[in-house]
Length: 266
Image 1: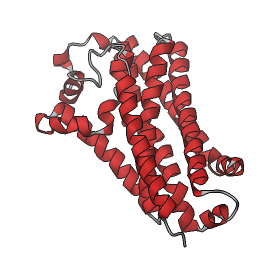
Image 2 (image 1 turned 180 degrees about the horizontal axis):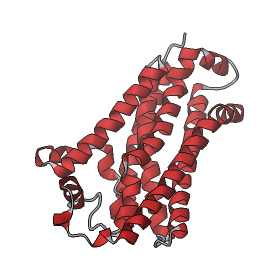
Image 3 (image 1 turned 90 degrees about the horizontal axis):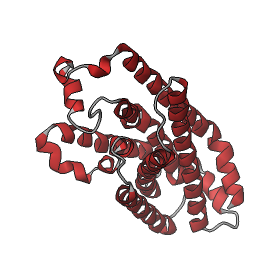
Image 4 (image 1 turned 90 degrees about the vertical axis):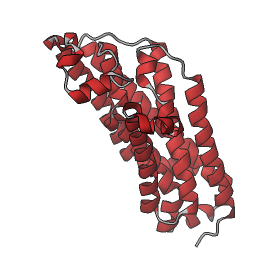
């Protein structure tokens, strides 16, 4: 198992490091943008002076009261921030079984004295470590940017809750995509399915918060359990959201394990 973990580190280190750097850099740029807004005095603008889309976003959890904290929190709700983490989760899960089977390397790995459950466990351990690294890089970008531009730095507790919720969201995407991977034979198609699930969840959540006919669908999305503004601005807890997302991750992982144990490899 340790040999497999080292192999995964060598194989994916560049991709994970690049994603982490991009997320950290993006959060730093968000801080720079917020500092620019603060300096321009735009935070004092009335809602009537804002464009219609900004008014719609202001009416719910994305921007809220347009405070410094809510704008910084929006950096974590931004689709770019979510896409960077989701890409790591989905690509690693798609590669874990379907990608390795497609390339023929999984037979070589399992030809060694390594049980299938140990193989899948090593893949999950590495993915969790990679996702945690990406999350920490993003949080570091927020802290560094806030200090560099003289913005209020969130407390350690708030940042820890945000990190746990973000990590749990990525873990849920990993678990679901891993289930697809255990049933699939082409890594590209599995990755596409994972990205479609993430995109559908995000779009239904965003549209449902602004359009009443879709509102009943919102609680059924993964993103309903990820609320950076509630955490950073309102001080909301994350026990229930994290537990829900981890339950999805475990369900996906359990289904992947069940299928992988019974799967015939070429």
